[in-house]
Length: 116
Image (cartoon, rainbow, N blue to C red; front, side, top):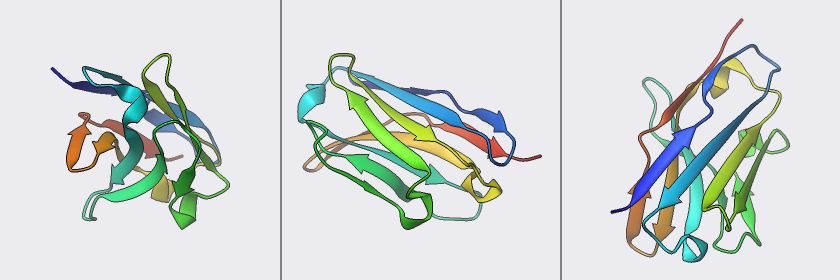
């Protein structure tokens, strides 16, 4: 079966960095677009960053441009989210998504808390 497993969340001070990882199994990873979403308390889930199947194109939520970088290693079936200059408003549960047409697979989420 398909497994999507995130890791790398935690507590970090404002201005700090974290790198999230998402390892996927059970699908042909290279043909899936991958995305990182987040959901903060009281807010809707939102797309933070996405990368297309072979990694040639990325897009970002405006508020994270220049601070976050999404990348993928197709040999390891893994997608990453490097988060720098973190702000308290980045606090949320971060979810990894694998998408192919109408197919969506989600991870269980990893908590990121930015606080002093």
